[in-house]
Image 1 (spheres, rainbow, N blue to C red):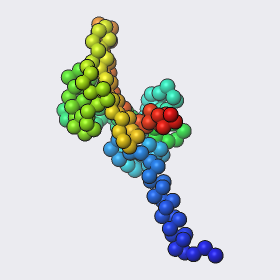
Image 2: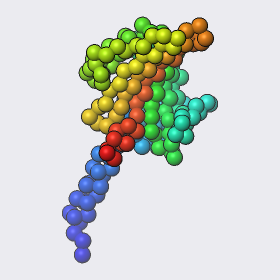
Image 3: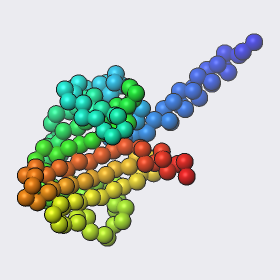
Image 4: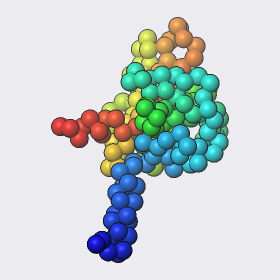
Length: 173
């Protein structure tokens, strides 16, 4: 016969192990969340009308169309794969290189120096590419990337990406 205390202890351990497996990605959302969990955690998230698939097949199922960070505005995209959250991407609405540099300073104040600190952030040329990355102890990778094609594309791109893919792949080494 199973004792009542044993059942309660087993349920408590199961509950703790489930929450320990989730990894906080951005704000109060965690990798592996379902659509319903994302909606509870981020009530302003809306169903996306443009799923924007990634190379791995994940789609932007939910979005926050406008998020103000300082004087800048971003679109937040919650990427789902097989019904679970795998990535959060912030895309600047009106990006420029100065915005990228200011944001890097904010990310440094939150996460510390980026990987490869001391190396140039931007590689100028026909295509200017600026990049900074952090590998957090929680297993989350944070990447900030700014791209601008001189003379060809008047619309530069600036994304901040939160995901666990690299850490998950590295754990197999």
